[in-house]
Image (cartoon, rainbow, N blue to C red; front, side):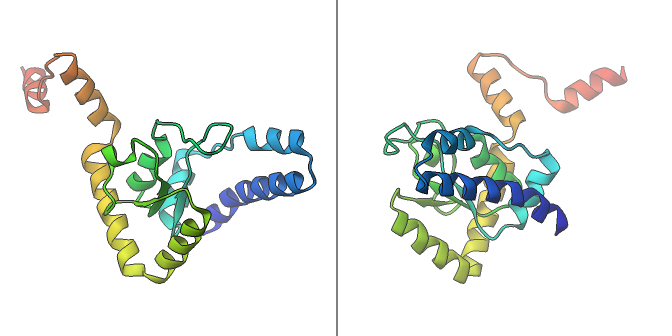
Length: 171
């Protein structure tokens, strides 16, 4: 898919450049590259996530790289909603939103990440089952309208059902 190759190249180049600069002990420049964000149009992002065999989602960590932030990033929801298979680091909130049968939750060991990547690359049926369940969960519970409805419910605001609103428009 041409769109995927075009979109993925800048991310790969960015990561490779930062890694080489760190090896050369040019930490200031490497840090500047690491802090840049690459944005993709939503349609390209969906194609990228849905076409990859494995989408790796590592959350930001504190400066010591040991403690992850407690907030689940938006990418955790986008990958699943786009139909992608997600391997995600074990951040405190991830299990509130997805089960281990819906995303592959990986502990912070580099060896374990490599082991799981190899495993899921060679176990397509298991990968596909997890991907399908994650997508179903994202579609059923994690769209923006689900968040708005939850917020409204928590605030005690009653929403009209769609059919009541349609009936009112007909009158």
